[in-house]
Each structure stands twice: as structure tokens, then as C-alpha cells.
Length: 554
Image (cartoon, rainbow, N blue to C red; front, side, top):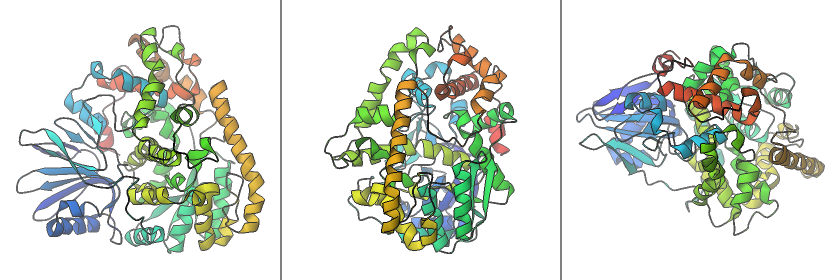
């Protein structure tokens, strides 16, 4: 969708419901707890807008969505995303859009307007964070705002007035949240992500407890733990399990579609496996995918660099950045010398940005950073991309469940104790099955005692992996779900070679660097950047194509 003061251009896939006063147009998954998701929930939302006003009504919906509420009499619009800020939608001074690429094309923005600091961030991460895009004039819409137009056609923001992750409000009831969700999606054909980890297991066990019918599924390469373990868990739960095998047979043909679905704001190769996964779900008749992304906020995963000191009054941002966020920075030798200064300053710039998320305790700061910096970007981009194919939702990233995790006691999150408690209470047999962390998910004392040594070994391997990233610029001790020849195939693509030449001609990549010289951690970032620059130039050199036509056909 593309929205201006004069109206709504309904581009791509969207849903719509109208009454006498309003027209509601939305993309993504929208529900009000306990009410059937989709149109029935939109009807209930509209009734609450009339009865109690927009600022009460807007607290009710959940899901991952972008919605436009158009008042038919005045033709004025209110546009907003889910209160978690996970779904990606964008605004400039005079436009609102569900697609960054659409907005940029309609606005006529040129490559000369790319912000250098934002470009270096993309080269380092393959993504942009904290609501940024490549241009200062375009930003991601935040979950705590409504965007509308002035009488002169300019966008402005109205705060929703929601609390943050550290709100003083009492946490919601975890089980009640999922009971209401189950009621809202009973009629859907559901596929629940199920890997060998804790988070997806917790999700599957809770939804199974409330009697929800669903399949479980995962993707990757044959023989990995994330195929073997969930097969056992699904059998114990009594739900079917489907595994999508990652293939790279048509990689060059797939790249253009991936550029469209990633909206020019992500490393296009990052979603190659998972988009195959979503397409296979659609082919099986699935119309709602549910992910366990965000369950890390009920564990101590993002605190481990300070283990076991989880209640310090100071936050070590340098340690967090160099061990968890920017463990393999972009090498200056890849870049033409004009960019060395910006790249050298990137870590310090990142530290300044993250300092705005620091709270009064180190583990609280890490939660705030994990949610607002990492998950709203990585989780948000994936969920938004998936919604191009079928409704997709990550309930653990709901703002209320994020707050619930944030308010858990430190000891409840240590050693995955929250997950262990819930899984064991609801399904003791499943809790005893080993996870990819080499330990069970059981809260039974004997099982915990068995797990202690395994836990220490696992954390040692994680530490070794981080040391390897820092010193050797490679990732070791990690079983990848992607095809083993993925990077090798990327480097053989004509498009990849053309992308490097394009960036050399744009004075970004050094003339002395060849495709083979760039490490796996950054090669996809460079190729994706080249595709975006080519898109701004009309897509003639790399053949990016027209996303408006491509998305309309998805």
C-alpha cells in the first residue's frame, strides 16, 4: 500500500473491510484476543473506535500488521503498525507505505541521497536498525505512533501512549495470553515452527495444551539436529512434522524475488532458505505460520557475556558490541579509502546509539537492546517478508509478552528455568527430550543435575565460537541450517560478479578487491547493497526488476 493525503493506492496483497464510517485496509496478521483473527477482529476494533475512541481501541489489537483506517466522510487516514513495532512500514514527509521500495520509487529518491553512515551500517550488518533506512528522509514507523496527514499533505506522528519494555505495569498472565490466542485462530490452518531449541518447544507445548490443531515444521539440510530433535518432539506431542529441505538449484532466479520480499533492507541471501520454507507451507494449505522468535527474552541468552553477574549497575556496551553484535566488523581493505574513516568510526557510533537504550541494570539494558535494536530489525524483517506469502506471527515478540519476560526474576531466566517450568508442567515427556543445547528442558531435579555438565560444555563451545569470530573472522562450532554450498554458489553467480563491479564503479569497494577476497560474513551485504543502488538507477545493470509488479503477483 502507498498512502498520500489524497488517498490509498492498494498495491500488492491486502485485506479490506468497510462499514458506514470507515474503510480498514491491512496487511499481515491482525487479531483481538479471544476474537477470530482477521475481519472479525477488525469489526470489533471498529466498534471500539466508535464506542471508546481510537486511543483506547488501539491498545486492543495484537499480531504483526500494518493497517490504514480511512474515514470515508473526510477521506482522512490513520496509519499504524502493531504495538510491538515488529511489522515494517515506512513514512516520509508526504508518503506512508507498506513497502520501502515502493515509497522510494514514488518519491523519486536518488542514490546520491544515501546516508554514508547508514550505508556502512548495512555493509557491516546486512540490515539497518532503530527505524533507520538508507535515507534520512524515510524511516520505519514505530509501534508507539499513529501517522496521519496535515491539511497541507505532510505526515506527522501522534503518540499512542503505550508503555515501554520497562513499564511499571503489572505483567499479563502468560497462559491466559495463549489461551486467548488459541481462541482467535481455531479456524486457521496453522504451522508452528519447531526446531531443536527451547523457544519453539515452549511455543508448541503451550499451544498444544490449549487443544489447538496445528502441524509443526522446520527447514534446513538433512541430518541436522534441527531436523532430528523436532521430529521426536512432534511425535510425542501428537502433531505432524514437515521438513523443508533447503535447495540452491535456482539461486540466481530466486535472488530478484528475495530482493523484493526483503524490501531492499536486508541481505537478500539471508532469507533464501526461509522463503522456500514459507512457500512449502502455502502449498500444503497452511494460512498461518507461528514463530518462537523472541523467546530468548525468557532466558539469559543475551546476558551471557556478563555471566554470572546479572545484576550489575553498569552496562559494558563495548563488551556487548564486540562479543555479541559486531563480532566480525567489515574489513577496511574491502573499501575504497574514502570510506575508511566512516567504517573505523562505526563501532563508536553504534555505542552512542545503544547508550540511549541503557537502563539501571546490565541485564535490563541487554533486554532493551535485544528487543529494540536486534529483534525489531531481524525478527521484524523476517515476519514482514513472510507475510507476503501467508499470515505470520511471533507472539513472544508481542509488547506485553516482552514486558512479561523483562519482569521475570533473574533466577527464573538463568539455566532456562522459565522454559523448563512451563514445559515440564504441561508435558513432562516432552521436557525430557534433549535440545540442541545438549540438555533437556525438564524442571525435574534429577534431570537438572544431569544437565549441569552438559550446560557448561555448551557454554564453553559458545565462548569458543565468539573467540573464533573475533580472532579468526570465522564462525566455528555452529551447525548451519543453510545448504553447505550456499556461499560457494553465491560466488559463482553472474549477478554477484556484476554487483562487485557496480560497487567498484560507485567508488565503494576497492578496485584491488575481487569477489573471492570478501569473507562470507559480508559478501551478501555487498551484493544486496549493489542491487539496491541498481534499483535506484532503474535496475538496468543487475536486472532487479519492478517490485510493484512482483509483489502484486505474490
